[in-house]
Length: 251
Image (tube, rainbow, N blue to C red):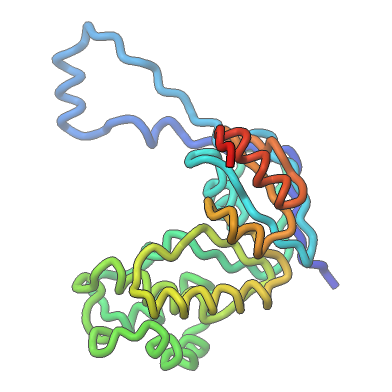
């Protein structure tokens, strides 16, 4: 029987420079008329640098660091969304990730149809999605809009539906990246309660957040990132102090 765990050994991840190069007709024409102008060379971005880390069942790990430090990239690497360039990545257990909630919707399809589509993207069966459809609809609380095309939804409505679908089932390994940014007060309360329930049910939690109070209330371990490197790994209280020192926060 396999034990749910995460093991990383000297993991490196790069963003290809191709993604940063302009390829529009306008940029090509601009380049043609400025042949004598020296352009800065664009290199691959070394987003994660020699990451070695082990997370065992029962651990609640908070990720800390400034914007662009590598927290979100690290989570997406764990979820298997970003390929690593070198090293070893082992993630045992069913992974459930909550980030980029608005991705994966079909804008011309209705909210109800998108429940099925998004469930398939999450690796869930059509039979299971039909079984939980009523619960998802009730949680999202979109009223008659559930049968309207997604392209007619506001950003908040899309987040509510995506959150309701993505959190309808938990997993052994839960990856969270401050996903709730829209919705009324009542929905925010429901969302927080559901996340706490998922956290309780998961064996491993990895949470990226700038909210030190929430991290200290939920996590027992903290990992501080700085320019793609881990500069601290230890008790969450000490991790918060280390992060504040790096960012020049005195209180």
